[in-house]
Length: 103
Image (tube, rainbow, N blue to C red; front, side, top):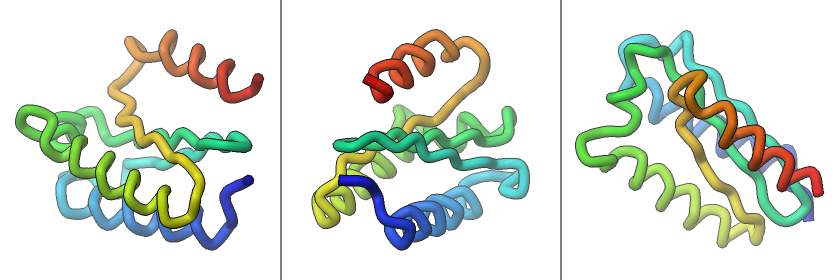
């Protein structure tokens, strides 16, 4: 089951609000949703100076985002996996997950 446009918009709006709360450069942040039939990956690209704020101390903010998105994904019956993309060092892992989504 594909993610509906309404659900996509709700997730993007929710994440934009979180970005506004935690980031110093919210205008530079981007959100990209990679859709699959069963699940989707939500890539969050914060400004390089805001990566630490999006992850939080001990990963608290990232864990909170995962839990909230996970709860919403159960409501709409479509798994969503948020990822905070830190930069080029994660490229290999992202490419591997994209390949998995395509198959």
